[in-house]
Amino acid sequence: MKRGLTIWLLLIAGICFWQAGRLQRPLVQMRRDFHLSTGEPLENTPPLVAFTTVAMGGFRGVIADLLWLRASALQQDGKYFELVQLADWITKLEPRMKQVWAFHAWNMAYNVSVLFNNPADRWRWVRQGIMLLRDEGLRYNPGEPNLYRELGWIYQHKISGNSDQMNVYYKRWWADEMARLFDGPRPDYQHLTSSQIKVMKDVYKLDPAIMQQIDREYGPLDWRLPQAHAIYWAWRGRKFASGFDAVQLDRMIFQSMADAALEGELFINRGEQVFITGPNLAVFEKARKAYEKAIADNPGETSMQSGHRNFLRTAVMMLFTNNRLAEARDVFADLRRRYPSPEFNQGLDAFVYSSLTTLLRDISQREATSIVLGALQQSWFWLAMGDEDRAQGFQLMARTVWREYMKTRSAPEIAERAGLAPIEQLSEQARTMVKENLATREAKAKLAQPSQ
Image 1 (spheres, helix red, strand yellow):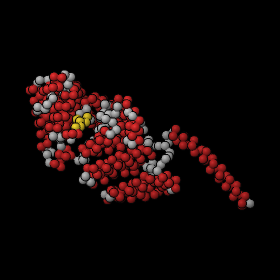
Image 2 (tube, one colour):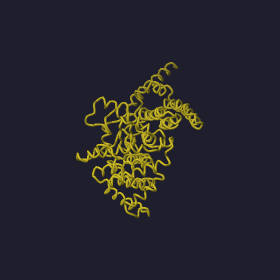
Image 3 (cartoon, helix red, strand yellow):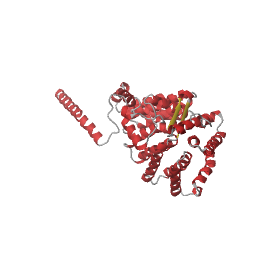
């Protein structure tokens, strides 16, 4: 009797398991159709991840929670190297736990990297943070907008910004990596080889079709610089985002575009060991419109309006010193209309020169480089046009800004992080840029040899 009952129970259990197996695929597909999961089922995972996922089952969460409590204690104690190993274990146990991927990458890129004095060692950890999010975090969580934002933030803040005194080295090493992928500021999208496309997609997770679309919408961008990659990852994450996440990704896009307008063109002369970034005026108008769209979509975000005001203010200076006078007047009029203030109740020329005195007190490295480089371009341009007096005036402005800015930043430890390139290097860059854009042979000949 008992034996017969046992056989029947085993038979029923077998039928239930068989039926569950039949229903698994339809249920997984329904989860996808109704967006009930943040990513695809884990497939082709490393052996350790596959083992822990299957063997430990629901106990993974319990163990991960215990390790997470230990990680919080290590964080408070500043034991960052131990935290790296612990966080790696948690990601193996719970690859869908988005918080640990962001936490782990931040720890490597920010906490561990600054423990080293050697720039190459620092870059190794910053790059590890990028690779962790890009190659693993987003692999297991492809629909998680916060991870796209965290990845873009490393490009926008850690590499593009100047809060880390080694940021110039990061920019150089990243530019060198991109230069191995394509020649020049961006890929030749129509003539990429299959091997180039494979490396771009497999190693850097860069889709040339998406890059080209971003260039059309926001560019032309210099893909050797980090601003373009911050925009790329924010754009990739935007389609998964809503609410606060969408606002954050939109902010990353227009802030990175503003950075590209101020410092988004790269000048390299390897023979002379010159690596200088300057304004990319080709993206200015698109950056301006991106700000306006974001403000229109988020009328309650006062921080966006504050950032927009500062962007317009700096843009007036940038356009003026680059001899884009009509655009400078247009932006200045827009600034006065949107943000009425006594300081704007004057003419464009008076505003520019009075602002120089104020700006020099707390101007950023990026803004100072933009102003100096723009003034030097003006100087070389008017020299080529035969107006030596005007050329000398812009030369004087450039050297005055450079000298005043460096007065409080001449100490080696400050100059390396926040100082400007030597005025001679900046002048040579400006001369080359102006000469390339001159139309006549006679004008080019006047700039054949530096004379300033």
